[in-house]
Length: 163
Image 1 (cartoon, one colour):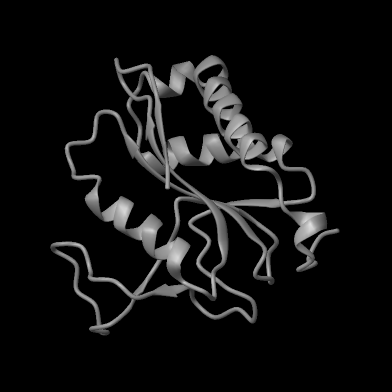
Image 2 (image 1 turned 180 degrees about the vertical axis):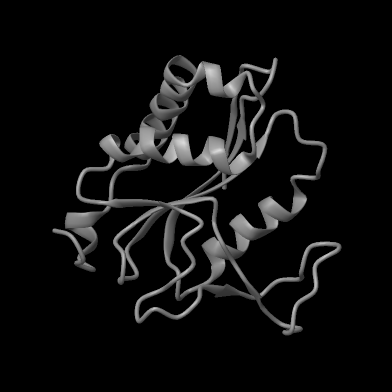
């Protein structure tokens, strides 16, 4: 039942969530290989991954860079800002998860995904910190969190790390 906070009716088993993400990543490689080999922006790849995720989560919303909680307020987590980023707050950073599976306008947050392209030279440390912060923030209540290395360019494999 969409929008309900009843744990029994809305949550999926860990193995189902993991299987869905793997299948969606396989589809990304099979269906969007022509995009993958172009080594596009991370946002292009996460958008396509979100499209492939949607059928595996019927009744759930799958959104990229969605940053609202119930009531429309920005999602915030307590953590340091990444290097070379300015923030007006010393104790929180507004967050934009790469992909989330949730019920909009509620605290039903099933899965949060942070992604990095296989061709990226930037550190994955801040993405991992964000995932840990998402899981620890009581107002967000994410059930599952995954860090994904996306296939890109000549690197046509992916990796998933569950947090």
